Image 1 (cartoon, rainbow, N blue to C red):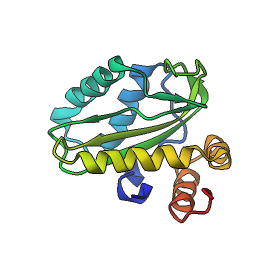
Image 2 (cartoon, rainbow, N blue to C red):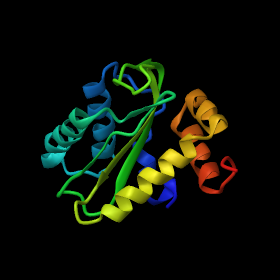
Image 3 (cartoon, one colour):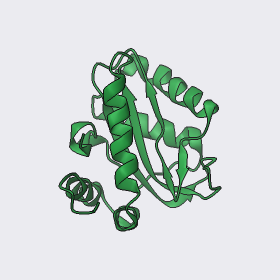
Length: 158
């Protein structure tokens, strides 16, 4: 699975304004709402589901990266958003460091395979130091999208 298979290009944010976990999640789901990838009447329910997943354990996986995710019945196919925070956000990350790169995933409950493949793709790409370094430096959505496209074309992971 590639980023292009699930990242909504219109929902990429290179200048995240939020400075806490709930704010990041709200801002990223809002980006998906603005891109018409989630239903307005399900907005709060999706945020609640992601925050509930965070209660099980932080999706801040370390090295400045978090992958908040959930399954939600209002979604009929896997959708995702990517956001970059220049300042970094305290996301209760496993290594205690601030998070700069966020990959938010929402999938339908009846498609667990897609959900797992997307998580696997994100984690594999994010093991690449160069990819992460460039992504953290991206100043606009176009730069983020170019890096995602390059990652999809195996220009980072060896």
